[in-house]
Length: 123
Image (cartoon, rainbow, N blue to C red; front, side):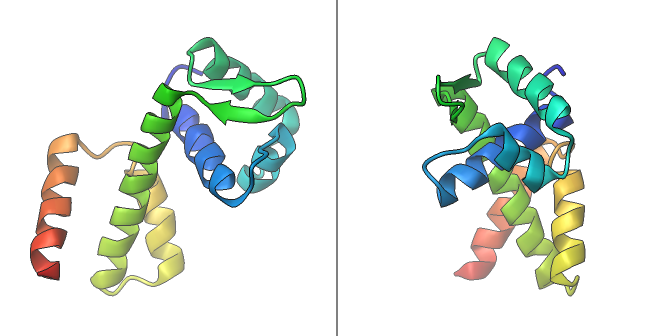
């Protein structure tokens, strides 16, 4: 796995789980994503090689500074796009699913324009 959609999914999942619990293990990521544990082990190993996560002796997965920055960026895209879709009348489940797909491909330029528009509407 290069830094790609699947890598982003892992990072975002670790970030979300770490907001709920101090300890995030491979089994937690596996359950959250509904992926087989061997896939998680491989993916986490690749993220370690890229310097985006560390795994301690107890098996806890931690985001590095760079990993956390990337994860926050992905999570921001996900939550912002979900909000936009619900504002235009899409049900929450569909909005979340669609945001999850689009967050990996939308350009920074388009995403920043969406955020700017949302902020202008909130005033």
